[in-house]
Length: 395
Image (spheres, rainbow, N blue to C red):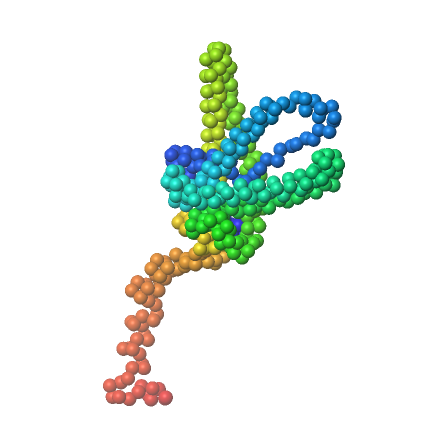
């Protein structure tokens, strides 16, 4: 099954791209992956707690002033703008990343400018679908709350809450699958055939429905791998955080002792520390993200050869006598349908023994011209008198 076989092929493709290490390539890929880290369509639902105590509600109402509400609104607006900006940059980075893996070179500005239109469509699709998922849960909840006169206890009993949570979980599961398929398969199709998001999905849908088992197995394997690799990367990130934080914390404390000027220097040092942490984290995440994207591209090309974005990388990792070759013990055909090199008419060593000019077996065979069966010495040769010798032998 391609979804299983491509697990190892993706490792080979990732290794061929990243090794030997090219510092400039690694840096550019890490920058792209940094912006990809903010995408993926996930929306934090938070952990809201509903206060029902009358005294607590009264205290909150007395504490919350108009100025505080305005401040919260400004902060929320700034966070929203920053999130939308990262989502937009993430959509651009999606195509830059795919093009980089495809060409094995990364030109961030050039690739970004070439894919502005596609990135805008991808950004709108992601945000629109995300809002739809929120609406599936929040609109019914709002209607229930409105019908109950804004009484939380009257609007939401245990059954209603469980129902809303179930609908929300199912909606998010579908949303996560759609977002993954959009990033890993539809975006490459958009790049390959210059399509929009919906057109790319229509093109991909035929491949998905033709071999659904491949993509179901792909999803399961990806989720398992992400869980395992995520735990390992999490421990590594924790270690990096401690290593980076210790010297900067010491530096910040020392700078704060300098007075007012030290405060500003401490802020600058803190910002540099945070940026350094993000850079190191991007370098750690980049090979993992590269592996998963190559895995998806290999599967896409194997399930539909018209959608193969990386034919050169595919040929490179499968030209070393590996899997799916006719010459292997299983006798399987190459994915591209070509003949095995061992059977090539010009290079097949097994055919050399039968070459008309070099066949040494003819020179040592009992069928050589100099054997007793040669026409010149055989009793079957016709005599000069024109009579057949067979008559002399009683024939």
